[in-house]
Image (cartoon, rainbow, N blue to C red; front, side, top):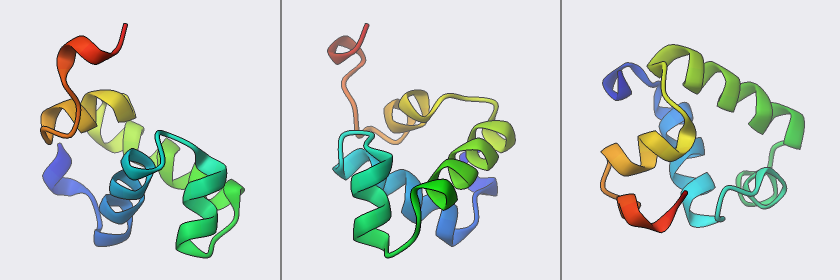
Length: 68
């Protein structure tokens, strides 16, 4: 569930959304490595059992029709 995310994981999800899903840009904005972003992404998807895009949809950050 989204509510189970740590504050840092939520920050990563939010920044990924702002960066269009780019791990590289997210890493730059957060001052962490791309590997750390990938680590967070893996933890987030495992914890929520959802893709990052589905999390964005659930949070209302993405229109359901805008992705395939």
